[in-house]
Length: 149
Image (cartoon, rainbow, N blue to C red; front, side):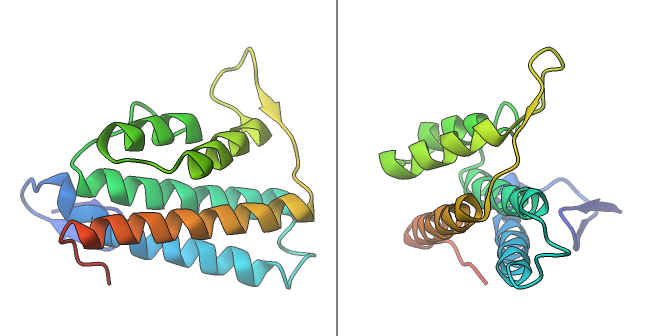
């Protein structure tokens, strides 16, 4: 028995398109946690909120990619946006907003390792970007005949 993406348990290989609903649920929970975290500034620092929102963004992106049975080259915001752009008509403004978020953490390369702590205003903008992505992904999957719980 294999465990993939939280609570999904499978005994045989299934198409990756089956996992998008679980990714949506996980993304929703991360977003809810981040929004709730705004009220608990001593626990949820901007850096922590950035990372929680980053996980939400990643899960929404993966949900769409799973639905389209496409995997990204990597899981940076840039790679996720590029992968989504290859399978759907992706809104240019949302694409640019997501790419801009990459500037806060570029941690994949040791030679250009960068971490910048966003301020509260940036976190509020990131929440709005995440909500736009949520809407885009859910609408796109539903229009294609997918079911999102």
